[in-house]
Length: 392
Image (tube, rainbow, N blue to C red; front, side):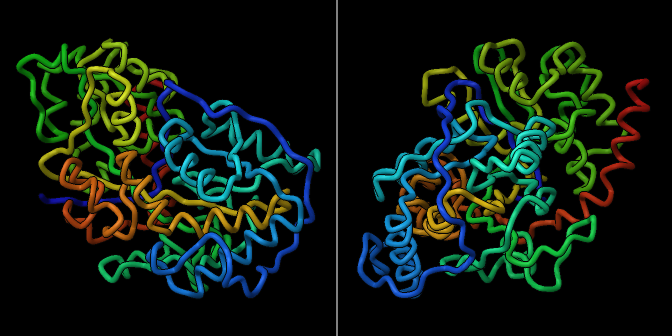
């Protein structure tokens, strides 16, 4: 399989289930990671992490109990998709994960984060967003000791855990501002009863006039994955300007205002195919009985890094750090693979990858993650083209 993966895509969740939101009484912030902690729930060998990482997690767990931190608050655009991972964390530590009732990306997310800063009412510990590099002003640095960058992705290390020399497209220092413990594939979502004899295998197939009215997608002028998919596919050479215009024409009235609406439209059979569909959302829908499937194209598929940031003035800082560390354990990795996402440690996907190959990113020939800084620096020019094509 010939892949040209890229990163930074903001993923929308399916609308099938949302995690209930609530807030907790703030606990003392504290920027230092507790030392010690050899005794605790995390066993280094069983979880496939170093002894240092296990000690760190056990110390954070003990510190959270001492500080009276009883819940973890996460803002994510993938609440439904992440539900099995949330459940595994709660089972491991007895700590519930709360957060935004609605999946938040784009403008609502910025409004939420800015509102917390302005009001001084900090209720969120961790942000989960593939475009996390755009939110570093709301975050604080934290070096995750449990994360190991695979040798095959060393050239893309800054997308996984940025180093001292890395800056975002706006010039913000990014060292240790996020970690990316897993990858997510984007491909083709199919509503099986409507597909019929149509069987696209390349992105350019969707530009063929025979797909008119058969394609759904989100509005390319709205920030988020609906906009990012054609940007990245132009950047990696999968589509030309003319082909993107043809796909937009074929989608016609099936272009939805939000990415979540585009996913919902596929689940409801409004169109046969979704352009740039996330593996985890489609798999979650299929698991609940929707007649849909996710598939990769024969070439030019792409991945995104899922970035996690510890927010400034987090009300539960020890639990926030524990979550970031725990995401690199075997327990977390196996739950991540169950959702259709790909943990960095491919050993953790072994039980799932025979059924769902892309949960092992090595099987899908991922060798590079294109820098989000590069993509962000070129975004405005490409979006200007989109607006010109649409007469906006």
